[in-house]
Image (cartoon, rainbow over all chains, first blue to last red; front, side):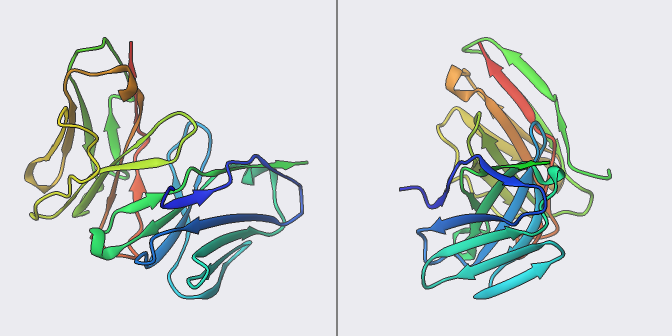
Length: 112
Length: 115
């Protein structure tokens, strides 16, 4: 079992809809979680991080964390074609040396 | 520099040759990370450096892989006797410190192809 699991997709959503991405993790020692966006052929860029249970909102993005269920999600509201990319979920366990463990990523396609 | 710089951007080599990949982190960043991304896969941690502390090498896949960081800045990842399964994009990232909430800035990567 991978430490961080994501559905590879593609997740196809119409423009203007909400894209919902899910991520589960197996290491209960993970303390912080990060969502990175990666366009094809480009390097990952950080969208959000979350370390407390509940929701965290930033513009059109909302990250949700449920530590009891070991579940992290990312919602993208009012999806735009420019949101089409692969979204990588990563967990960090400080006791393990501050290295991020990434999931395989979910490819999102926003159709006009 | 303005961002994390990696070179070369592309490297094609023959099986059995040694390669060196270079990473120049953002000035002032004390933490430096190497990750590997195979086609269609997520990022696989390789090694990280934090200041003058001993590096965390726990992700290196074999003893053919090594990395050093000179003067707390530039890092070189060396792969000896390359194999075809080493083909991947090698990404370097840096952050101000190795903190649980510190943002990682990634370079554009080196695409390594082993023939």
